[in-house]
Image 1 (cartoon, rainbow, N blue to C red):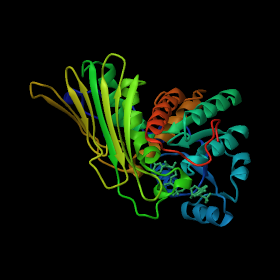
Image 2 (cartoon, rainbow, N blue to C red):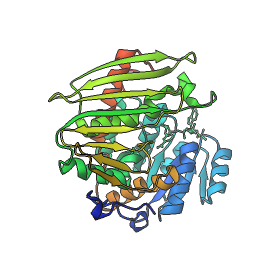
Image 3 (cartoon, rainbow, N blue to C red):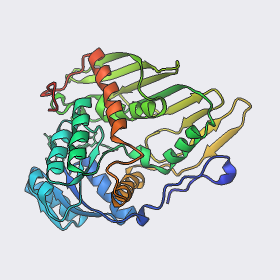
Image 4 (cartoon, helix red, strand yellow):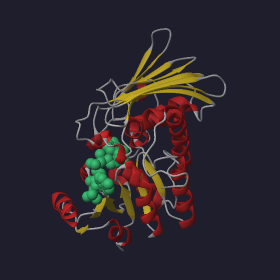
Length: 352
Ligand SMILES: NC(=O)c1ccc[n+]([C@@H]2O[C@H](COP(=O)([O-])OP(=O)(O)OC[C@H]3O[C@@H](n4cnc5c(N)ncnc54)[C@H](OP(=O)(O)O)[C@@H]3O)[C@@H](O)[C@H]2O)c1
């Protein structure tokens, strides 16, 4: 179990309940790739959520996944999974450029949806998903799993309680090494670091500071035909600023720092995963939140449990990652792309 901070640490205590206490939903996996495996492992190990079916473009791949995780049903198309009668919610985990179409399939079939990050290729797709879910009366959320971790509940309380004072600056970066066979190098799959990695620092920055009023971005192309690296400086109403860098060149500390007039909060890297953080005051006082460092196995079940609780309560969104926040992040990503000339194939003006 991940431990929350002790009251004597001087920090708030995480209010995230044990994932096993959430009511169970019947989940259908749409796109049995890398993250689908991590999600299923985590949910099966740490929650009572039921992974009830999987859908793949290939019945063989679907059956292989179902066998590996002991799932009762395997479908050879996304349409069959979407219309399966005994599924409550579809977890969309295809490559980015199919999130919108896959989510629409599920929503049109009356299913709730949890959609891997980024929620769509752009803000237009994000808005369309939100509008369709609202019209259908189903639940929808982006699987921005970091915001469902116990540490983020503590960070939210630190921010809301004013411990940092006025936030002046957010610094966040995310670089990682990938084998050349990875889809991040594939222009046809909306490759490049922005949607895979950059959505984490962008989500954090916009969560803390809101929508920027101005930004300047620089891009560096990769020989594979995707963006290799980008950096951006953002300015927010009131004068606060943020700096983001993301790239596919190699691993970085994946640190994030939130600077305020009273104290500085530094999240251990990788900041998007289970782990600790520290609040440091000018007089030398340091408050440490100790959450065991972990990866997807230890972390993904929190979002599944939170979604199950929200749906049981009759909510159509989560408070940890409302659709308006996902749209706001995509608005910023769109502007970065506009300035750096990053284009994705098959992306029209309307939702692709
Ligand atoms: N939350 C996280 O920490 C995290 C981590 C990694 C990735 N992600 C997100 O999850 C999504 C999937 O990433 P992944 O790394 O799991 O990708 P992946 O391993 O490549 O798997 C994606 C799956 O999508 C399906 N798919 C549908 N159309 C496809 C196409 N044209 N080409 C390739 N695959 C296609 C494939 O399943 P079938 O062909 O069998 O249907 C494939 O197994 C991405 O949007 C990514 O941003 C999130």
